[in-house]
Image (cartoon, rainbow, N blue to C red; front, side, top):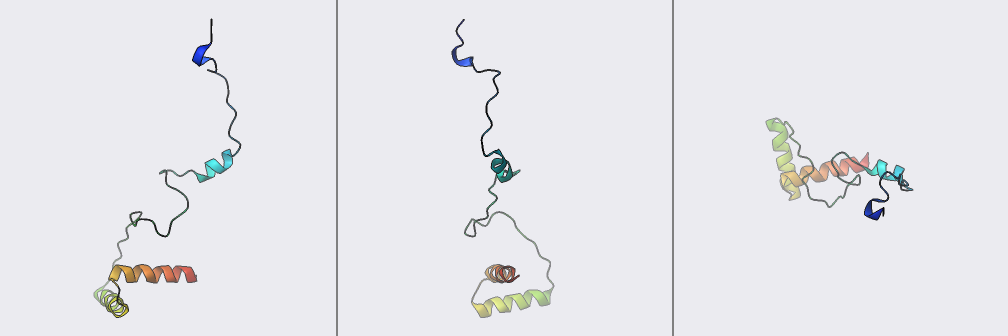
Length: 84
């Protein structure tokens, strides 16, 4: 009887050479491990509790810088994070 298309059933296949690299790059949600600084901003949302004084302070600082409130907060934490 000819083996046809199913001749390799049951045979063990050789594992790829870079299995460790493949396993290390895997994530639970299928996303990449490397973060793109220009990527779409839909990864996480934060909700920060502020009192009225803190909010007004942020709002005035953003206006003085000519930025939106969200843009000001984003630029401030990125600058701070790079400095640590």
